[in-house]
Amino acid sequence: MTRSERTTAETRARNGYIIVTLVRFGGIALIMLGFAIVRGVIDLPRAAGAVLAVAGFFEFFFLPRFIARRWNAGADTHP
Image (cartoon, rainbow, N blue to C red):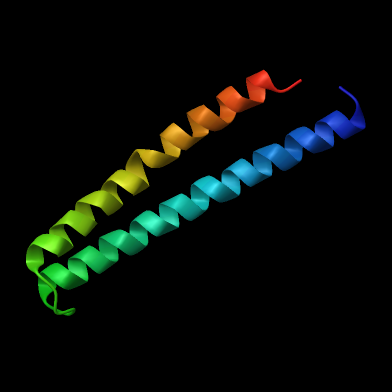
């Protein structure tokens, strides 16, 4: 592996890590927003808060794995 190939691989890995981390932070934000709605801090229907909280849990726990798999699959197809 040449230096430029290694640099490219490191950049790709760093970008993937950043994306997964941002997705997780987005999930936490959705969970907190959903809980705030359910608790009545934000005046919206409780059902909307519950839906947002569940979506946030999905985004936090499952979406990063899906993204990582797709990201790694894309790495296999590039020369």
